[in-house]
Length: 181
Image (cartoon, rainbow, N blue to C red):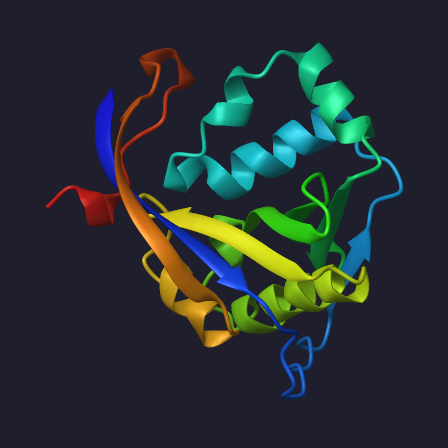
């Protein structure tokens, strides 16, 4: 499946100074001390499936295990009333910059008011590690509110690039509905 997207690169050079929104009652976020390949794939596929997250699906298990074992990688899981509803991945591999490599909620958790507080948690976690900058990118295949939400928490747009993706059909992914028009 060939898909044209616009990838937007964003950056934050200072930690937010406004108070973070409180996580909703029953919503918790925890850093995983270890994330197995199976656990990561489940998170990645559930969160990213509707938005054409495909690159890590093609990564061999051995390579993904090596990636997850790097000290620079941190995986955080969001739970609502004991059920996993999202995750984010921070990558300090380009230190002193911190990259928010992946961030998202599972489809059933979208639209319940979790997103802003969860995103701010990710941003605050990155700054708590003494980063000098935090980066993230999103694209037009992501949830339509992704870019506005990143800007709302303080990211600024650095550049946007048009790309053509060749997504293997064997992955069974479908183009998001908002891209069909």
